[in-house]
Image (cartoon, rainbow, N blue to C red):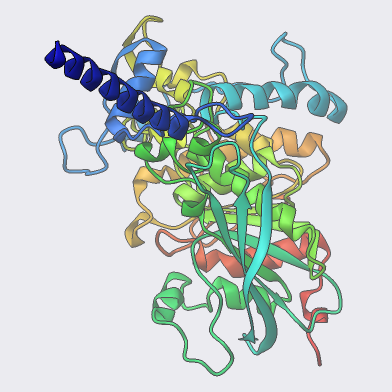
Amino acid sequence: MKRNKLLILFWVWTGIALAAAFSVLGQQSQPAPGQSALPQPVNWTAAQDHQNMMEQLGIKALRPGPSGNENAPNHANYDEALANPFPNLPDPLRLKDGRKVTTAETWWKLRRPEIVEDFEREVYGRVPKNVPPVKWAVTNTVKTKIAGREVFGRQLVGHVDNSSYPLINVDLQMTLVTPTDAPKPVPVMIMFGGRGLPPPDGAPEPAGRGMFASMTGGDPPATEQLIAAGWGYAFLNPASIQPDNGAGLTKGIIGLVNKGQPRKPDDWGALRAWAWGASRALDYLETDKTVDAKRVGIEGVSRFGKAALVTMAFDTRFAMVLIGSSGAGGAKLFRRNWGEAVENLTGVGEYHWMAGNFLKYGASEAVFSSKNAGDLPVDSHELLALCAPRLTFISYGVPEKGDARWLDHQGSFMAAVAAQPVFRLLGAKDLGVSDDYNKEKMPPVNVGLLDGHLAWRQHDGGHTDGPNWKYFIAWANKFLGYDGGAAAKP
């Protein structure tokens, strides 16, 4: 009997202890009052995330993209005779119901929204309506000289409100530099890149100055050219906005809004996320009294050239864009069979730039059968058209110096030619060539088409827009009516 009582007491005390322990654990896992439990961020590889999107879309197989190695058996096509399997581009001035767009009002009210919807749904993805606000703060400043002029630099951090999902933190990083001797607010170019504040006056130049000179064809770096011309500049770090890989799609601003969960097919990709970050940078510049917010531009090279074009297309507050060597996903026509292809953009290495829905156009086997570039409802000439009538400068180098054929310079020129009618409709000057995009050829290297609001110049350098900066600044000053020299003290 005594033994039975001891057993009973043992089990009673064990039950009390277990109940207390579970109570504590339950209290620890309970969310704060008014909050639901937070899901943990998904931590997939790019391949896992890519496969998840294929499953969401019902895609069983994707066509492999061609190789950028010209000696590989599956190298990309570089035969112009095979480059245009879909020679007829969508008409940017024809409504979906077949009516022709003949007035600016119809463009703005009807046709432009149609094109934007197609790009958002099928190509670059939608910016969610619930993206949290950004609060900018100056974290460091410097007064120094650039190109012989006094400048004021500030390092900024834009903290994205993550109170709805504290497990992901996003802090946008930007550097802003403006001349201090300017009598009025100055134009500013936002450049995608991660450079910090310039060194204090008298400090040695940072390592790599010679490298920047070589990238600009012997000209001073863009920063010096801009300041000398009476402009300001900003560097915006894209990595602080969104990681440049598929594994990062549950991180960065995309991950924050999705609470660390995988994307849906029409969610935004990295290009649209970087563009969103540039728009938030412009929000800050609109509050800075040294900046002429009506004369702010955006610039980038390669994948960031794509992002610069996407930024300009979707945010009409930007006054100008310098699109450097952007290739597929940028100014290059998707429908062109030359160099980088749609199938490269739908592969595991690049798909994160695009909306999930874009994978459909690389599908060889799916619940919807298959699709290819010719099935896209839009193409890059319409992305350029979304920039109209604002200043749009397309820049490339030459393959001999490293601006690879992969980028399809001719396909980008064709896109610019096909965008001309929209620029003219909105009262802007075009390239000055015919609208026959299947027949027009690029002008010779170092011969720019710079007489219109839509401009083209292929320099004789490599994978950079450096040699075109002096042409861009002079071209932009002309159309902006800005006398940069007047800003300097005598």
